[in-house]
Image 1 (spheres, rainbow, N blue to C red):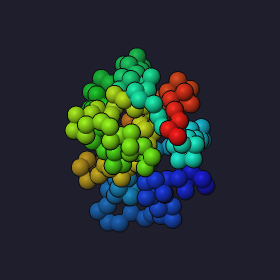
Image 2: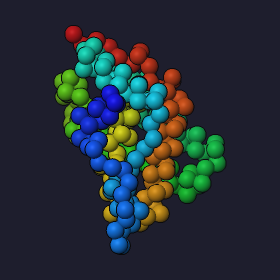
Image 3: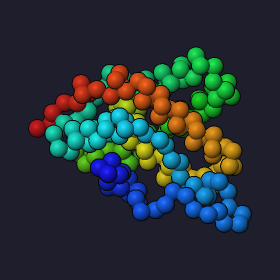
Image 4: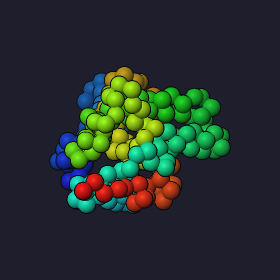
Amino acid sequence: NEYKSYLSTMYGIRRDQPRTRKRNKGETDADKAGNKIYLNLNRSLKERMLKDRDMILNQKCLVKVPVKFTVETVLSDFLTYEKNENSVYHKNNVSHDLINGIRNYFNNRFATELAYKPELAQISRFEKNKTKFSELYGCEHLLRLLVCIGRLISPKEFDDYSFRLLSHHFQRLVDFVDANKDTYLTLDNYVSFT
């Protein structure tokens, strides 16, 4: 319940909306999904996100920049993982396209979509148009992006198959982060700002 409350306050997600409903005539799978990508975050990732929120909003800490494992590092590690797994996504350059899209969203939407209010002062130190936030911030902020990605991407830009493929690939990235959470998501990434 605390996580659902977190999502609704941070990202404006309505908890009272049902995830499934009857399909109208001519409606695609993407339309039925409510025009959103839903990602499955397990309990441990939800707890890490809640801890991140607590560290910043209640314990008056910020993520120290640059973090040891930046978003660029995580995305690069994910590409290596996909290559080593001999993934069909990697063979068809889906991984590269997805990573480039995530990087662009992350850098362009960072201050407006992914930062908590206490982080804005830290962000204001960087030149807005020249800063690549993906080279400074880490997995804490990448998870924030992945949680709200569903409302940032319109399925109307994709056919049903491509939208499902994109959704599945985002889930693979979430699963990769989960498998490596002890490396990427540590309390060593925070420093007090009081």
